[in-house]
Length: 220
Image (cartoon, rainbow, N blue to C red):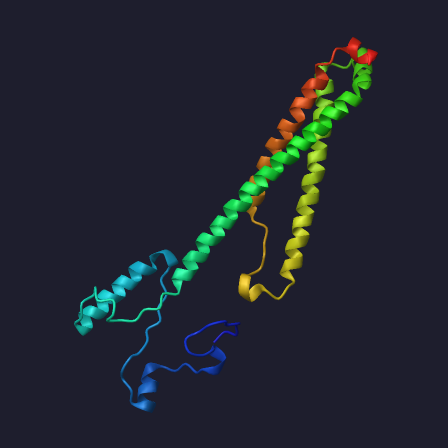
């Protein structure tokens, strides 16, 4: 058997057992009765359907009622797998909601910073308008500054995420929880949401800066 960590098994661990053909077992011990059948469905979602087919097949062969649940003892290990699947789905939804709100709050923070920047640089905006800069030029300048701030934050967050994944990957937990990876779907969804947040956070302060009256800006 392939070496692996086992926190449960059928009676014993693989390392303490030998697996031989049924015909060899009969030749050595003379025992023909079958005590256990171990099977695995293609997917955990269809385990109950497979269990029903097993009951019906065994009932036809050994003449018992397929609805008699006491006729066969069944240990359905897929129930826990299904429960864990729902549990991790709930975790994913929870973290997705938390992550979305975090990005939105971050976008509001960037927008507030840019509003402050616009107010502190009102005279600079007035001078630029006085020497020929158009509203589009002013808007493009502040919009680009916002995108730069968001881009720096996104790159920093991505590098931090990669570092955390690599750090967790070096821990001896792969046999129990697998190797952590960065999901391409989650990464794409995050980038799309981040782009929308950056656009909204940069557009409003940029429009405010572009809409300042040059004369009033020079007086400030």
